[in-house]
Amino acid sequence: MHYMGAAVDGYLVAPGTFDVAEVQTLRAGVDSAVARAVALAVAADPEEITVYGPGHRFPGHRLQTIPGDPDTSIHWESDRSRPTVRNLRPITHLDPRLDARWADPRLTGPAARLLGVPEVAPLTSKISLKRARVGSEFIWHQDYTFLHRFLGPTAEEAVAAMVLLDDADSDNGALTLLPGSHLGGPRPDDEPPRPGDADPVTIEAQAGTVVFFPTLMVHRSDPNRSDRDRRALFYLYQPAGRPHLDERQPYEAAESRAPVPAEAG
Ligand SMILES: O=C(O)CCC(=O)C(=O)O
View (cartoon, rainbow, N blue to C red):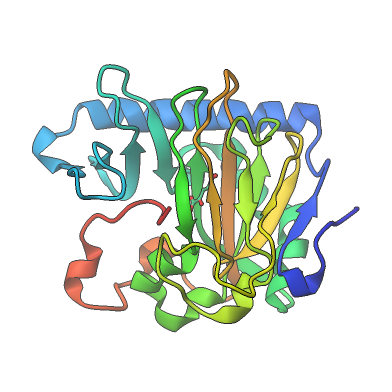
């Protein structure tokens, strides 16, 4: 396996981790899982949908938990005339083809390496669909911010394995990372790179590539301005022996359990 990204940068890029057939299987699993969640969501009480107002960083976006599956939330894009899922979290429990990959050594090996532990366990999963022409941007953020609500400071002990389900480039909203930013501790959402930070790196890569990065890694992505989807499936790992995110009680005040974006960006 060829990895790009030195340890000091904090991330790893593993091109060709999944072959074409495996990517097709994951796409089919995602399609089925999203369809299942959407079918449940349409039956939901509209009162239970949080709509972000004009002052919010995602104005017009809606966040909805799934009836009967309250730990699962859909984040909708803003255009209501064409309801489009932006994110769904968690997702792997909704399809066995997605669940099957948790134990894949091509994911667990690099995740353990980045975390510096012998074994890892599932923390949570998510899909970022970034649909053609519709998929919106992710602002600069760290996944740490969202996870801290449940895990407290140990939220820094987790790694995302981002599996590209489509070729990604700057036109369709490829991920941009701030190398080395994981070493500088938590930062506010939407804060641009600081003087002294490394230059941002946009990961243009083919479907089947996996990008591994820790929760303190600052990252963002542009809207999808192309006619091509840019789907990415995330497996988040933590050191073995710790409970899944959905089994955790909130770390902070009780109100932090209120619906929060499936992602901070
Ligand atoms: O899909 C992307 O480009 C970024 C996703 C992300 O940052 C997140 O879910 O926190």
